Length: 221
Ligand SMILES: Nc1ncnc2c1ncn2[C@@H]1O[C@H](COP(=O)(O)OP(=O)(O)OP(=O)(O)O)[C@@H](O)[C@H]1O
Ligand SMILES: [Mg+2]
Image (tube, rainbow, N blue to C red; front, top):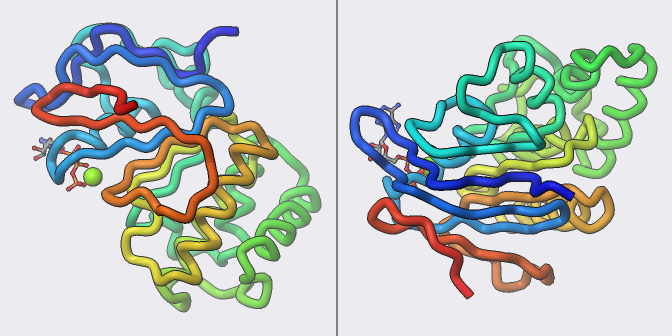
């Protein structure tokens, strides 16, 4: 089996280099934490995984696609295999909660009925079925992040990328997010990659941890 994510001498950055010659491989079913100080390059790394930032040098493969010089069509295909959760939710304000969750399935070409059924199932998982017709700005931050979590899982992604998913959340919403990430990893067999400042101590999952410091990314054993 090829690795789900593989980097060889990967260099990432903008005007200046942020990550230098990183070598790593994440597999199906891995639960990976990415840690490092503010500004160390954690979000930069995640961006490269979903093709928002092209490698400056080296090799990066995600779900068997090479990210260097990837074309729009292949990128669209790749993103259909990925679920993403951002710290600031990034929900579509004009759409209802239900429609936000239906969106990744509509892009995949599922029928409206199938999309609605899946959205209802996920809204139950995040305890928000009673808010299905609300718009994102009518929800609290924790509720919006739970919707973002439901949207990220809607299309059964092989890879879940999460950037500080519980950064601003209270314990109730954080617990729902961690429980869903754990079950996405264990039940749906998704590879889960989480950027975080603090690894939750109560999370009962076998994880790997990579730390970024001074441009170097190393696995912490
Ligand atoms: N679009 C951009 N253009 C230029 N430089 C950027 C850009 N985005 C980030 N950087 C720089 O790249 C470095 C890494 O930023 P990044 O956002 O990856 O850090 P981070 O580890 O996610 O930090 P935090 O924990 O604060 O979110 C920082 O020095 C930042 O200033
Ligand atoms: Mg960041």
